[in-house]
Length: 71
Image 1 (cartoon, helix red, strand yellow):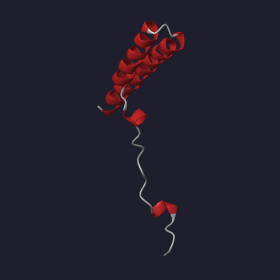
Image 2 (tube, one colour):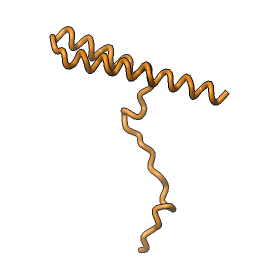
Image 3 (cartoon, helix red, strand yellow):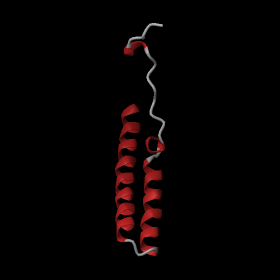
């Protein structure tokens, strides 16, 4: 058996959950985490949720820009 050169191998796509989350999904996850942080009096979880909301907002903006660029 010969080793195939790396360039001839099919590239595997990254199919992790985090790579499939859209901006809106990220914002929803963030809202749920922030709410859970408030309910459980966990400031770290609340901050993480707020961070995810911000990341989701940025992702949405990037997605919108990508759609506009395709047009």
